[in-house]
Image (cartoon, rainbow, N blue to C red; front, side, top):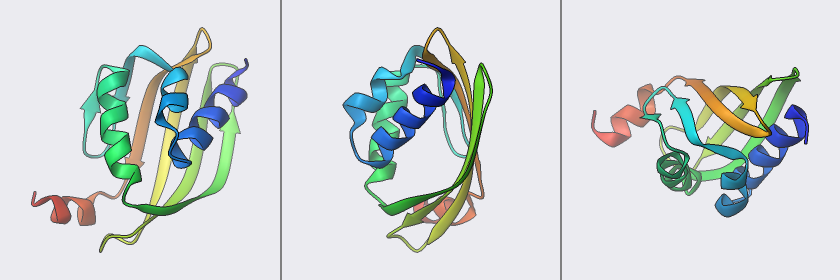
Length: 117
């Protein structure tokens, strides 16, 4: 499977609520760094992603870019929270057919208020 297939399948799985399928595309030692959290194990990341996805009404993909070993997605997370729409940029590294790192960038101001911090 090429990078585009891996990242597209992962994105479609988690946005569709299929976290078992999403997990298949992540390396066990996933290096995730986001605007709120950092994880070094895919299983820990999936727990947080599952909780976040429950806040969403939909995700609208705006743009995607792919290379041999990486990808970038720009999308809007439409939440059912006071945070409203969150524009998100996600950058992926893919190694041996699995996502090895994710850098997630968004304005976390409103989510931090909701979290009390």
